[in-house]
Image 1: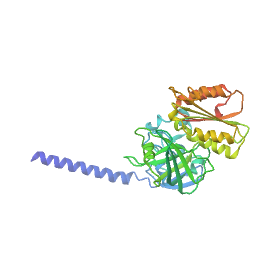
Image 2: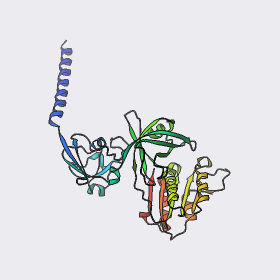
Image 3: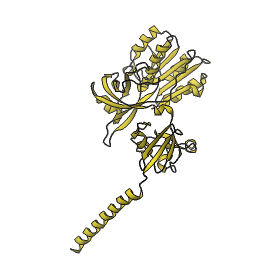
Image 4: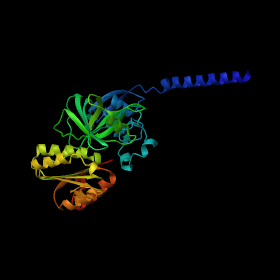
Length: 361
């Protein structure tokens, strides 16, 4: 009996303490309404204190890139907090360089709003929107890659630069998450967004997008990205991709030839085997209309296949075909070893680092 009474008393005391802590948290840690100042008065907001900066921004339809749902595990939600953000947390250190810390860059998902807070956000991100869309088609391109076309419902149009990306909302056991995918449809196609999605085993976003069907509804935010196409038609464009790195290349090339039909562009695309080749005939047809488009595909594992194109890693083809000393801008998208190898070749050909844009995945 004494043992039972002791357990009951201990349980009661524990519950009482827990209740008092909850009440204290609500009373003592009540930050009230705080001012969130964006870009020195450009977009002032009133937000409830106690939430994360990322949550407050999302609640006001300011969609900072974030792939992990605010768990602090992707490092994508970087913005500048000039005042009111408190000290940098240990959970942020592995995602921030020393230069970023000195420049007051923070992870928005780790910053708690406890007082008036002042931030700087690039104007491009202030133009990002949440889109409702309907799947128009989901077409197999290879054994593990699909082309997804989403027709826009609300808003009905998107304004995007070649090489930008969107973040598709996908379900997960812990709630919705966002995954980034480059836009493959050209900039002039404003009523739809197309993606090239490789199925990643266990990947939340790719598994979701490989199971959707025409007529299904999808939400995504965008556009994001820092690719900027050189406006000088005398500057040649070099596109180098591999796998689903095709997406921004397709966007850039079709947008380019809609605006500058005579501009010179090089497409280098690396595949493992012939079964991994896709969009080749489309680009060959486009090159018939625009003879200044040069299309070079290369197989790294020919394995006795009937193939008349290039072989070996794609940076070897870049080195083989491009002459040195020509004014060019390059866009690269693919695995890090490919990006590094191609960058070395392009630098040796005379391209400046600021003329080479890349996306590693």
